[in-house]
Image (cartoon, rainbow, N blue to C red):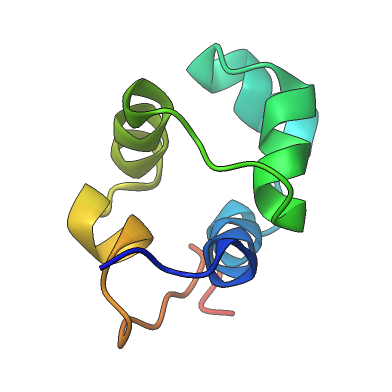
Length: 78
C-alpha cells in the first residue's frame, strides 16, 4: 500500500532529527532539493533513493515508505 506523501515526509523529517538537509544530502549523494521535496511531500523518492534513505537511517524500506502503523524516532529519542 502506498502512503500519503505527507506521512512519508514527516517520517523523513523525524528521522533526520538535528541533521541539516545538506548533511543528509552530502552523506547520501541525494540532491538537497530532492530531500527537501520529499520532506515537504511534494515528490515521491525513486526506488533507488528509497533504498538509500532507508539504509542511511537504519530502517527497512517497507517500514519507512509503505507501512501505515509505523512510528519513528530520531537518534535523539525525539
